[in-house]
Structures are given as structure tokens and as C-alpha cells.
Length: 632
Image (cartoon, rainbow, N blue to C red; front, side, top):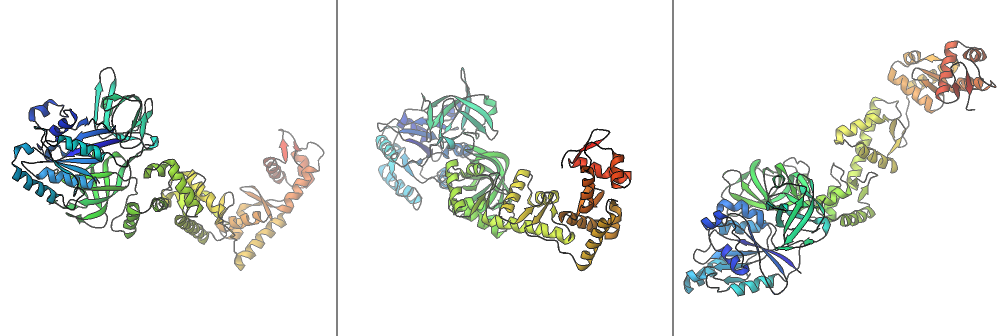
């Protein structure tokens, strides 16, 4: 069974609600104020019975300019429009405004109904039909069915119904996979005995009775307690159906029009979006950079600022890329359509398409920013994924699927193909990075380490913690697991080596000057000459001339196994250390400090330092009075 949503459009008092009642038998004006004033104020809903087995839902929107915000809350989820023009008035201000809104929302099909034909003469009707056809020339409504009707006499109603049913035989553009489920809330109320109920057009995906879902943007977890589509209870609701959902775990006060009921990962919650913005041809005002406007997307309305990225103003008929910075978070999917209206006076001025639901904050007048937005706007999905994996935030695969509105399985396929082509790498923490960014990371790591060596020429590498700190500060990364994943990959591809406490460029060797080589030899000779008589660090550093050089030489001599570090204050030549260990191993059983001192013929002080070092290395064990060699 196909599920189709029709939306009405047209000027106030042109007979939209009366026409829907004639087609469906349902009066969509339910409010007392609507009955009293004779105009639609809020969204109305109906369904058109038919013999073809289609579910044809209708969203009846207000035509009055004061209620455009309500019209916008319902028009976004429709498949095609029933555009209404009254025969006695013709094209009027909201005819034009609604039509421009439909264009901006990407609606590409519809039927024109010329209503109230019983109120005009035949000659007038003929002339008006020509005027209406001229007005829609060059648009998506050019050449579409135009049917004169009268709800009062019944003229044309059956012909219109047949045309609507005929248009339902169309390819379904909506996707029904559960993972993509989302329903923008256009009405919320409490039903006695049931609790909180929300209604909306099920935009994508499907939802089952008993399923856990989220109320976004708050992220509140709720359960589907019951569902109805077109007045009938159901266990499954599908994309393209007008749906009422009874939710448990939330009160009416905690849900607002504009919230989105969704499956986890179906939408992103964001405070910033990149868009392609078109100003209406009829707009008589200019949108300036940093203008404050009302943003309408789905059934939501939120204030935001328009950041124009390549100009200072955009006028009627012009199209440009922009970043909208929202004053409150919104639940959005890439590709969604939107409308903007001025903050004051509230006039509809333009609209367009969301090309990035989770962008970085852009700087203005940067050619690379515009090039990136062109890719997000019109590039292939592979190019978009590649661009996203080249950004500073190292996206993860599942999060990227959410961001781009894809199934996880679809993203898996794209990533595997791109990995196979060598264009994208998946790091050990599941983060993604493209090949261009990999080269940039490699260059910057080399710069960090080389800069350290310029200041520390005798160091074997940059201390690990110092490198981590530089990465955190310069790349704005707080996730240590991500940093380690980056470094692990750089080790894997042979850019750097892990030396334990330090990181070095692969193949790096300390290069001594002739003077430094002589100094190194002199220090090595000092340790050799001292033998068991341990030299204090102060003496060595004094000979070196400065602490940095002295410690670098000590570290290099340790790496070459010329000397051994007993503790931060004492080093000893490897030959002397072997002699010290041999002396301990010469005892058959336990021995005291005094016995060991006499064996080495040295002072108590030096003997004790040597034995403490052996204890730390697990060569000896001390029971409080004597020691014994436990590792030979």
C-alpha cells in the first residue's frame, strides 16, 4: 500500500478547507476560533478515501499571512501540493508567498484547483485560468493538471479526486528502514486514559509498537505505547503516513511542536548548519551578513544568525552559501529544506537546503571554505565522505553515518571501498582520516619533533608528554585515545618510533659536534675511572657546562650501555656495575651490608647505593637485616 501526503497551499479564504471536506468528508477546522472566524488558523488533517488502496493523507494549512509559521510547520513533509486559487480573486499575496515557499522547500509536483467556480461567469473563469497558467509558467506547476471545482455544487470534485489518486501512482522517494525513523511533531496533547500523544508526518523510516525512541533535541528516551494512522490503530507506521503516537515516559509539557521523535542516530542535534540559501525573487529586502532571522525546518522554528561567507549582503533572486548559527539546538538531517523569515517585521524572505548538519565554524571570505561547501552541496557521497574525513575533528564511522543521514551499512560500504582505494584510513579507535589529512598530520608531527631537536640537539626524541601536550593544544584534541591512535598509525607507517618516554623520527640519530664528542668521551672516561666509587650528578653536569647537555650525554651513554642509571642522582659505568653484581652473586647465601662493603673494598655509602639499585631491579631481596641474590 502506497502512503502519500498532500499539502494544500493558497491565499486565505480561497476555499482550501471546504475543498478538503468535499474530497474527504472531514472538516479540518477543529478550533472554536476557526469556526467563529471562518478561516484556518492551525494545521488541519484529513485522509481521502479511494478504491485504489492508497493511504492519502492531507495537511491543510492556513492561508492567512499571520499564520504562515503554522503553514511552514506542515508543508515540509508533503509529496505533492494541491494549490488552490479562488476563481473570484485569482492570484493574491499569499498565493505568491506560498508558491515561493513551495519552491524553496523543493516541492516538484502538484495539482492546481481553481475553486468557487459557481461564483463567476464562464468568460471570467476562462480568463482567470489563463492568468493562473501564465503565473505558474516556467515553474514546477507548469503543465500540471488544472481543475476548476466548486465545493458548493460538486462540480469537478470527482475529477479532482481521480487526478489525486492518479498522482499517487508514483515512485516512493521516502525510505522505510527503521534506522532512519523520524517524525517531526506538529501537534502534542494529552488524551484521557492514554497520556501524551504526538502527531506528525512520518518523514522517513518506520516505527513499531513497543519500540524505544528519542524525543529530540532533548534526547529524552520514551516508549511507543500505541499508534494510529488515519484513525486506525496499528502496530507499525511507515514513511509517508500521518501518524499519531501515544508515548510513555514523558509528559505533554516536555514536548513541543518542532521536536522530532526519532530512532537513535536518525537525526543530529546541532546549533550550526551550512546551507545553500536562495532569496525569493519577490523579496523587497536584503539579507545582510549577521542578520537575525527565524529559521523553519521540519515543524520547528528557531532564531538564528545568517553568516554570509563570500559577500556582505544577498538580495532578491540571488543564491549563496551561508552558515546559520542557531540560538537553540535543532534536530536536523542533511538535505532537509528550510525557510527563513526576517526577525522584525516577520516577512518570508527565502529558503533553501541544508548541505551540512554538523559543520565546523567557518571564517568568512575564504576560498577553501566555499570549495568545501560546493563539495557538500553537489559532490558524490564518496567525495563528501572523503571531505568529512579530512576535517580537524577526526569523525568516527557511526557518527558520520548519522551526520550524513545514511544507514550504518551504507557507510560501511563506502568506507571499505575508500579504504581499498587508499583514500581513507581507519585508526585503531575507529576514527577516520583521509590520505590528504594523513600527509598533513605527518608533516606537523615532523615539525614538532624537529623544532624540539633544534632546541635540544642531544636529545634522542621529544618527551612523550610534551608531544601529547603540543597535539592537544595545536590540534584542539582532548581525547587521549584519539591522540594515541594517531601516533600508533604514524608508528605503523614508519614516520616515528616509540622510545618509551620519548618519541623520535624513524632513523633519527644524535649528531655530535667534534667538541661534543670530546665532551662525551671525557664523561664516559670519568665514569670508567670512578669504578665502584659512584660520581655525583653535579660533578658530571658541571663538566658538561649545562644540565641539558649533561643529561643528554648521560641518556645517550645509557642507550649505548656504556653507563647505567642507578637512580636520578647516580650513574655508574657498566663495567663497574657488573663487578658490583658479581660481588653480590659470590655469596652462597644471605649477606649483610658490611660483608658486601668489605667484599668490594668500598665505603658503606657506595655499597648501600649499589644494593638498593639491585633491590629495585629484583637482583637481590632485603629482609631487614640481610640480603640474598634471587636473580642470577
